[in-house]
Length: 331
Image (cartoon, rainbow, N blue to C red; front, side, top):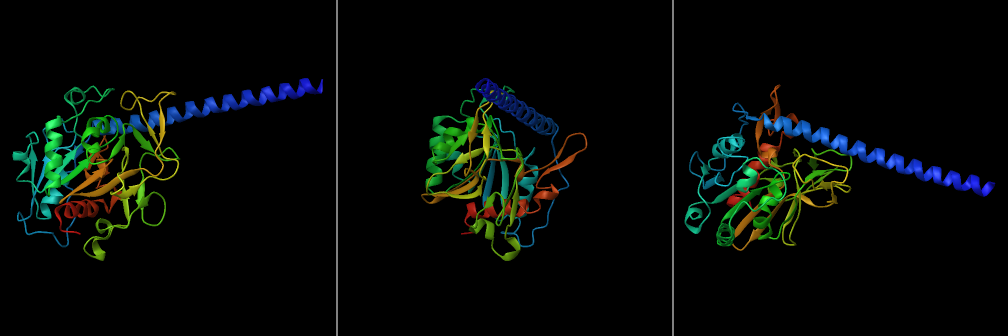
């Protein structure tokens, strides 16, 4: 009888464990779905914050006298100079750079006059038309990728910004050419949060680098805020700037923001959301989140999102420092 009671107790314990585990999975999926449903709903109603104009105490160049920074607009980009990256363009322009949108495909000819090329959330035409499901084909042709690689090695500077799925898949081939490997998903930490603050001292790590030091103590960065992005692995020669904490996962869904109980969860502990690399005579900066460099008003309440968010006070200076490093102003 004791053996029967013991076996019944063991089976009951296993059943309770299975029930609790199933409940946890359902809770996780419901929480994730809610978080990203809210995020996507807000993003669907984003408009640029045209009033956002943080002060620049010491511009890198006199007005209009700096190098040319081109923001790609030829590849179904979700962020453009006149749209979601209006604040990006205006801030960098006020730092003295010559900023313009570029609707031209990449070639040795079109890249020759540029100092910094910004590619933010490029998409293949199929995904750009609104189908945000797998597969996510490359946003660029092989010839364009080869042209960008050659241009960087010869002294160009690439600022590649890749948000959550499907953007990593569309930019994977270009990133791989420089040794970066993306997870085509949505990144969250061990608590389930998709919005992180990277700091020098605690939490997700912000690295000590020329970019985070700036040109003076006034330009030093202690914290950088992100807003729902992707994760990537760096090549050995790269310097990770934003490192994801232990327990971080990438949710690799088949359709953007559609999370199921069987959605793969890839461990991305220690992966990056921001890194830089010197390639030949050129430079590359890769980031797995785009909103952190925007300033938008989201949803019916026009909630600040991006550099205008109160939690992202140092993001504007961080953006300037990244662009200055790419242009060789910061070494």
